[in-house]
Image (cartoon, rainbow, N blue to C red; front, side):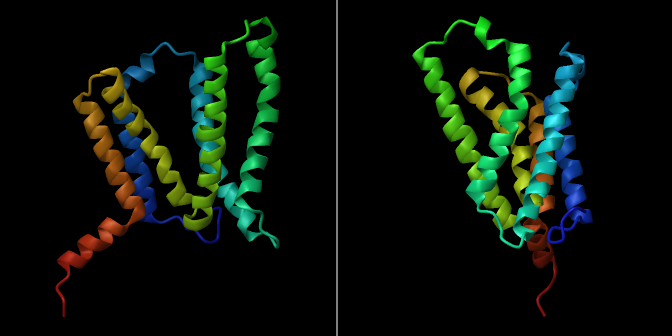
Length: 193
């Protein structure tokens, strides 16, 4: 809808619907009655919406007369988001009232900033440049599956039927959005002439 080179198709809509259904099944009905503040739930929805629009909006930089390099886009987005969050952090967290964290905590934050944020954004925008916003958004469906799998592997969390069905629905959604599996199946069914 918003880009010229990555059109919305029935296949992509089907994939998105399956992915959303998979996330809903994976998370389960407990999230609705979790007692989490409504503002926190709205913030999560806003983040997901922003993530989706961010890919489409960022793709427009490719259409500029002088396209911006991937690193410039990543640095720009992280800088602006930091500046937007800074006033909220000062009002809500009041960092001057907190005790100074130890070296392990500081090193952990630096690791998260460099590897999990800066490097991840550079990779995100590189994939966006090569594959388009729809394909780069596939990663967002893998986040709950990865989190569930890591919780099972490292925290001994229990996997139920809902988590497995949700993961399968997400996988089906990814396959539908990507389209290669559907093309392969059609090729297998269609007799060679």
